[in-house]
Amino acid sequence: MIEGLFGGTFNPLHRGHLDVIAHVRESFCLTRVHLIPSAIPPHKSSTDLAPATDRLDMVKRSIAGIEGLVASDVELNRKGPSYTVDTINHFRKNRPPGTDLRLIVGSDAFFEIDTWKRSREIFRLISIIVMIRPGQEKRSQSVACFLRDVISEDYKQTKGQERFTHPVLKPVYVCKVPEIHISSTLIRQRVKEHLPLASLVPSPVEDIIKKKGLYL
Image (cartoon, rainbow, N blue to C red; front, side):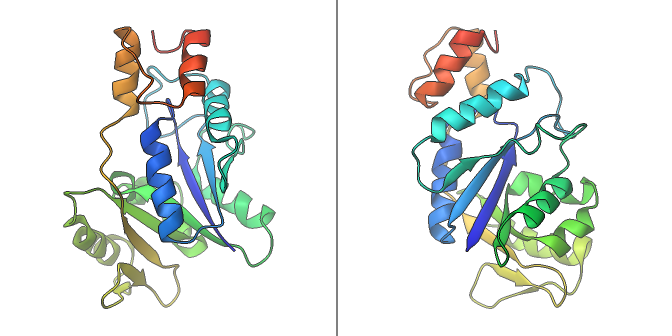
């Protein structure tokens, strides 16, 4: 059983999030993907950040009935900043024995991973799937350089595959995902300008934004 961990502020969740996760899930035959809203993101400003409970509710209601997607409140139930290494350890302890966990991250976040809490430990604990958007194909080589220069020179690229292996640390994979022309920043701006959201977010997200008066 292979399961993905996909964290973020989801401020708010939008259709682009769901599209890329569907693509990654299919590409790696993931049994389940856990969407994990952060409570207090340590690397992002709290400006315009909706309450964590509202962001979790957006995720839960938006993925209800979608096979293989699960909302997790693990970071909301933990005090303090939402550190990825703590979340990984939670899932390692609480998933069935033999579960192959993979952390799903965008390329921008991946290239900052050395600034994360106990970043070296992350590579020891879990495989990583790095999402590369169209037009960023050269970032695959950048991943190779980053792994070699920043994490460990013993990471080697598997010939003919977007996979990097290490004798001790977990593998790192590259996944080319579809182009997404939506961002949470765009949606928050449209809310401020009272513009329609229907084509950008699942209907439960729009309902919660309107009901709670978020992002105004």
